[in-house]
Image (tube, rainbow, N blue to C red):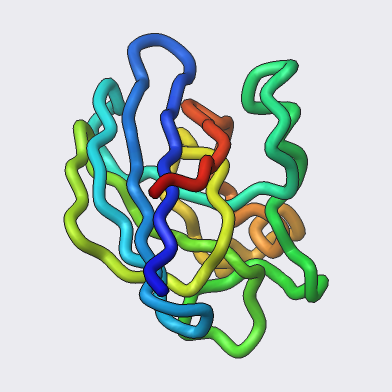
Length: 141
């Protein structure tokens, strides 16, 4: 069974986009396609957050989704939170990339240091800075 979802992103300034998700079975990686416009040049962290709540903008999405209470790191590290650290460049179009995760929430203003920034915040958030856009995943047909 193929699972499909979509996330419409809105954010600060002119940052907008749509990300599509497709997974060919429960244990398969999630394939992402989509386009995000209005980002400043440079890399931007692309993270999963705990809540699908945008009542107070992207702040309401809460901390990074971390059901196993691991430190922040890259996808190849032994310990890392369950999320993607896809780096988005400028006005990005991604097609296709694969990640093993279930939920999506926010794009950040800076690159993610993958937990190697040498401080406590790096181990929680990757020092990726403020949230520039966010959205909630919705299941599609």
